[in-house]
Image (cartoon, rainbow, N blue to C red; front, top):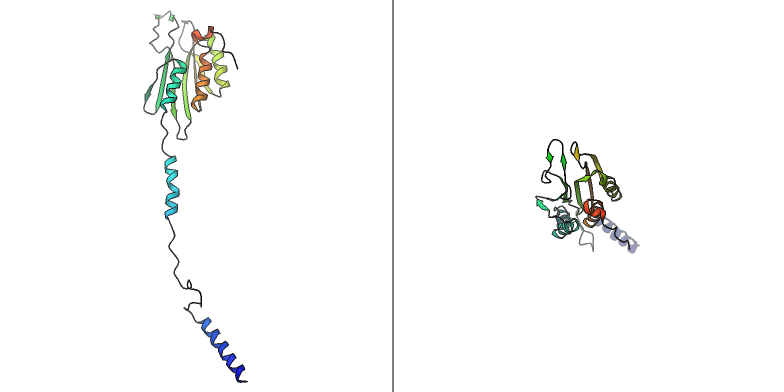
Length: 199
């Protein structure tokens, strides 16, 4: 009988200790320990690459050189934009009002190229074309996924008749160069050259 009473007392004492507030559980050193402050170091490190991605991409000199060589011109950089002007020196232009019109009076194709932060290139430009060249250049622009903004006359009563095609587009530089070279295959003296052999 005494053994039963002792066991009941021990059990009651154990339950009382478990129910007391503010006491740590036996064998649990973490009980009652304040939580660690949140670790913000990793979050700061994760944001660093995003800041690098927002840095503006610059014109690649190798790309602008390749465009110059492909079209036989010499462009200039003004701020973020590379501009290539290609005068129509192959034309002998005149009209009734002015007589001879010098090519330096803006008789030229102009291309403006700059770069997106994502790395691709944008291009806007205007082709100065003899009237009979315009359809082939239009086809080349559309096949190259360029968007044509407008097609219209450049002057009045001029000979030969001139057409201005304004366009815009985007892509990597090799793709843009490919489209521009295909357009120039139909312009000026290039028009009379044999077509390149497709491999």
